[in-house]
Image (cartoon, rainbow, N blue to C red; front, side, top):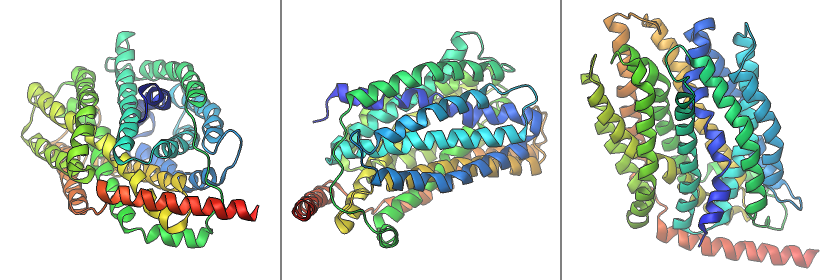
Length: 445
């Protein structure tokens, strides 16, 4: 049984790291759009995310092969800390006249720092326990910290008098200061308090053969495709939230409170989804949550100016489903690695979580890179007023496209083959194979 103090220590850095998510994905694009334009912001952030296509798999692969007396994951997390802190300040508190090049360079630097910390941290969490349900608790602790960090990014600027419209620059500064203070403390706490399992002995898997086995992992391919589709479905409304609230509902000042309610419902729902998945299985539970989210999004086209309470109800409904989106995919990812470990005899957890991290970033980048140019072509202007066709394009991107993506993800997941029974069998076989590898390595030594 993984103890509560260990869960808290492991999840601690996720909170300050998550404080950056909302500002970077929601506030930052709108802030820079005022100087470089909507379409340019979308293209720049998409290009920065393409950089992750190189760094994420590389960091995952290298961390799997790292052998130090401090562990495999700790050195990478520590290496990412200073780069993340420097990039946060440059990106969120830019110098006067910062334009597209500044946004591109420091976005790439921040994404690299994130990768150096988040990929090893996620792999570390999957290795703390091999139990089907304990993995859900570990993922739940980490993702609860993520949501709490996001809520802190919403609430802290408001508490300091900087949460209103037109105060985006001060909001970004407050979040940057808080991150620079809290992140080093949380990382040191994690590195000291959380034990890292010893790396399995034996030679690493050959790169070429390892990639073939990875691509031949059918549950991995299905889960990755569903994860990408659902990530894109979540990325569109996240990217367009402020624009939708201001231009469709006419309620810009209420945006912060609505987001806070959404994430609060996500935090409240996490323990419920952990328990429900333990009874009904992760893939079915996640599928039902996505279907319920589709029902809530189906109400969006009927909303108009002044429908604040109806939209708030939709935020509550989708927020309650958010807990499943956060916890269950991360736990399922750890289960898929077991199948690869059984086939290769090598735990490549870092590489797998790097690919999932890349899918998350790609989904978000596609949301920004597609949504903003499409809105620009439709004649949409962030300051308004907007013609009916532009508002229709906003509604379609905000709600209709996500419904289609989530339904496609459910179709992939409904008959997903790894449940609690099969995962337990996989773990027994994995442990036997790793023990055999240990004995052979010891004999050869």
